[in-house]
Amino acid sequence: MVIVFMDNFGWGEPGFNGGGITRGAETPQMDKLADEGLRLTNFNVEVQCTPSRSALLTGRYAIRSGNGTVPLGEGTYGLVQWEITMAEMLSKNGYVTGMFGKWHLGRTDGRFPTDQGFDEWYGVPNSTDESTYSSLEGFDQSGLNESYVMSATKGNTPEKIRPYRLDYRPLIDRDLTDKAMDFMERSVDAKKPFFLYLPYTATHFPTMAHPDFKGESGNGEWADLLMQIDSYLGELQNKIKELGIEENTIFVFTADNGPEALNYGSTSITVEGAYQGSAGPWRGTLFTGFEGALRVPFVIKWPKNIQGGASSDEIVHAMDLFPTIAAITKSKVPQDRVIDGIDMSDFFLGKSEKSGRDGFIVYMGNDIFGVKWRNWKLHFEEQEAWNTIKHTYTMPRVYNLYDDPQERNNVLFPHTWVPKAALKQLEEHIISLKQNPPVPTGQIDPYEPK
Image 1 (spheres, helix red, strand yellow):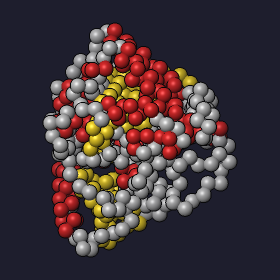
Image 2 (tube, helix red, strand yellow):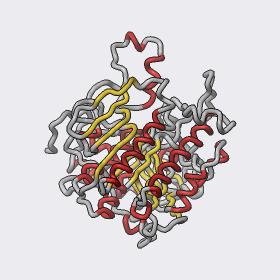
Image 3 (cartoon, helix red, strand yellow):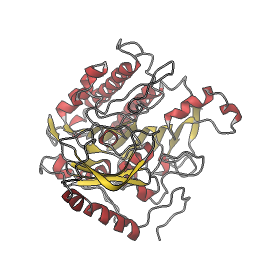
Image 4 (cartoon, helix red, strand yellow):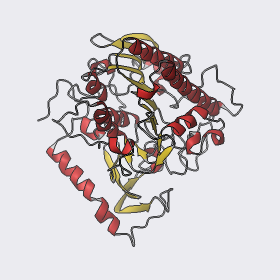
C-alpha cells in the first residue's frame, strides 16, 4: 500500500486533468498512472495542511481531533495518542509502516509519526516555509528554535539530522524518494506487507526544483518542479515493478489541498515572482471554501482489481480512505469513536457506480464555511484567498457546480429547495459533535473522551 501525498498541489497540475504541458512540462508518469488506474475528478480534502492530514490518517473530520487549523504558535498541537491512525490500524494487521516526508501533526514528545503507528520516519515535523527562517533578518534574535529534518524509529526518540534550511529545500524530495524505495525493498525482502506514506514537500513555498531539474523544462522553475515530481513518481512505479509486487500493491496519488496563488487581481512585486498553482476550472486556492481548495488530483491503481483508464465524478473525501483501506486489507476500524469516512471499496472495485457519499461539511479552520451536496454548494462564509477579508452572509449563497464551476452566480432563488435538501447532513453533523465533543485544540496527553 502506497499513498503519495503532494503538498499544495492543485487539481489542474497533472496532464490527466488538463495540466502538464499547459503548465510548462508534460507529465507522462502521472498520465500513465491515470491510464492504469481509477481517476477521480471529485476527490476532496480539507483546505489546510494539518486538517487534511488529520482527516486522511484518522478517517475523521479534523475538527474532531482538535486539528482544524494549521498551528501558528509554538504550543502543543497535533494528534493525541488516543487517536488511531491508518498506520496504527495497518500495523495491528501485520503491516510494516514507513513515512517519509512532511508530518505537520505534532512536533513535541509523543506527537511524532513513530508515536502514531509508523515503524520509521524521515522528514520534517512541520511545514516547509520554516526552511526560510534562518535566512531571514531578525530570526536569529527571535529566541525560536530552528526547524530540523528528523529521523526516528518506533520506540525511540527522534534524532535531529540537519537544520531544514534553504540549502536542503530543493534536495529533500530526492532523499524522500530514495528512502521510500529502500523501505519498499527491505519490506519485500522481509516478506512483509507494507504501508508507505510519502507526503512530499513539493509544491509548498518556497518552490525550488532539485539541481538535476533546474532549467530542464526551459519554461521556468514551476515547470522544472513538475518534471521532477513526475520523474520521482515514475521511479516509484518502476521500483514496484522491479520488486515484482505491482499486482498486489495499491498505489494512491493525491494531495493535501488546493494550490498556492495570489488572490485574484493581485500583482507580485518580489524579485522571484509568485508561482501560481493551478486549480484547473475551479475557483479558489488553499484556505478557502471553494472547489479549488477542496478538489485535488486523485488516482488509485491496483492492477486486476481496479479498472484501468476509468474515471468518475462521484464525490469522495480523503477521510473515506481510512475505512476503505480497512475493508480492502481486512483491518479493524475502531468502534469506540465516530468515523466520518465511508467505505468506498465497492465503488473503487467497480461493484458500484455510486460512491455512497452525497456531500460533506466544508470547514475552513474551525469555521463551517459551507456544505457540499451533489452538484451544489452552499456557502455561509467566503474569502477570496488565504489573506483576504472573510465575508459572512445572512442567507447562504447557492451555486450549481455544473453550470458555475467558478462559484460566482448565486442561485438561491429560485433554488431555495437546495438548502432544504443539503442541510440535513449539517444538522446530523452538529448533533454528532454535541454527542461526541471534539478533542480540544492543544490538548496534552494523556487524553480520554468524557
